[in-house]
Image 1 (cartoon, one colour):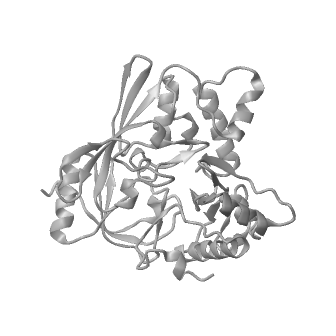
Image 2 (cartoon, helix red, strand yellow):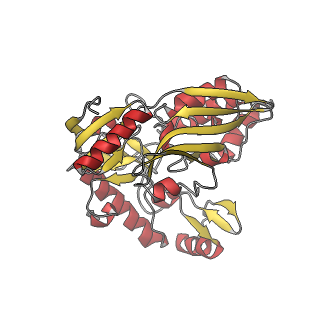
Image 3 (cartoon, helix red, strand yellow):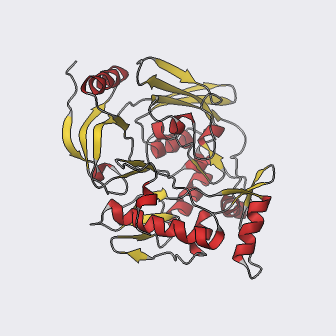
Length: 358
């Protein structure tokens, strides 16, 4: 014990993509499973709640900060095991996600290319079942290695044991049970990229040549960049998509169409069994919230209505007030309550948007 350096009152805003929020009571970075085990024991002995912070790209932190120990897993390493027409890629939870995607594409592996440009770390991807452009992490996941927070043992979970759903999983539903240490993906070395999203299909279909993984990655990066969804210098800070696209049955879709009125065609994507996904961005814009809307230090991205942005010098409360007003506006217009995609730390209310000014 005692090998780790625990920081007190450590600012968290610089460690998040929003650059908002207060400080951590304590923070420690770990680079191995033994160090992770030591940190868990320290938190248990000192009676501190544990918060696991990866790339900070899907978390909203309270202005008052976070009581307890913020644990930053820096577990690294990537291994590629090729066999037959595929390969199993194993990556440490602390690896940068898009760097892993870029590596697999450069190695001629298929499966992750549509998930290019997503910020954050590998360990976060199974927690929220990261997805984009018709592909989810669960589509190619082989196993997830975890450490039990209380017992300290390491185990592997199959995709079925992960209970994946739309932007959710066993890990998100049980945040206090385990910490992801490594993730394995089963990728292909032959065939064509899986393209399910109309925007991507349209962009790659014009050349008359079957696309490869690199072509799809380039297209996806261009699409994300055009929507302000790539964290680059000069781009307002965000968590990407702030709200989840609502999923409705045929009756729910009919209700939204009736609310839209004037014969408006409500965009939708079938997800099977008579169930449809409606773009939250369309709902937001058709509820009176335009791209580029600004409310003090926060606002809506000029490129995509689903991205709530921080222009600098703001507070988390400012962002929550804006998010709550959007939630209420969409609810009044279409009868749908948008569900936030990021997780919230340091709030007394399990749904901090309920307590925001709207």
